[in-house]
Image (cartoon, rainbow, N blue to C red; front, top):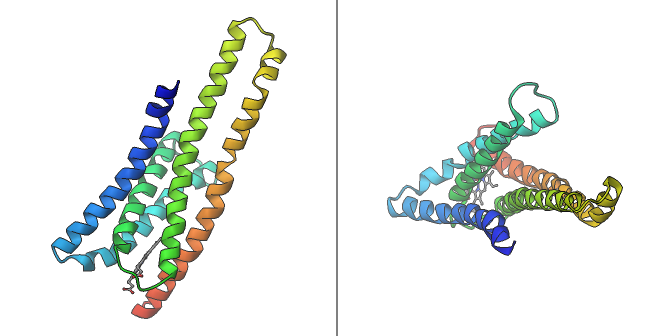
Length: 192
Ligand code: HEM
């Protein structure tokens, strides 16, 4: 059980998060090494576009879009949000001039982590409750008895499922901060 918990959940979580950090550090080092830091300044744009693109999944889930497999779109959401965050991290680099974009980056980080934790925890708890149910059914318990036996686990699972309720408000904080940053940059560039 503890090996499967480690291998199936904690390891992929750490790998995905660790890769994000490592790729950001390596990319930033390369940009500095080849004097291409100015490119990083523009990576905010494709990063933002990817993150906006990742929201197609949310539109599909809330039935604003009627086509597309939700499972494929969820994978697309995870991939584009991860890649977009990487580009934004490269864009942020190791420059500290302004507080607002750093707050946006912090919110983005919490958002990515809450998404990853939610994905891993939810998956794990679902399987756990399912295997408990099967275990009790095999022991010959009746349906109400099985439900009684997994009651607290099911309640916990329900609590896990609420992770989205954290993921979404954090996303809104992130979006407001990022928009503030983008608005002020565009104003400075004379684009608006
Ligand atoms: C259309 C998208 C974006 C554009 C055009 C843009 C543009 C810029 C520019 C021009 C700077 C340099 C400011 C300076 O040198 O003082 C900057 C810095 C920064 N941006 Fe963005 N950005 C975008 C999206 C984002 C997003 C989505 C985030 C975070 C979630 C972000 C986080 C940062 C950070 C952390 C810095 C460094 C601030 C500092 O030097 O202290 N940017 N951005």
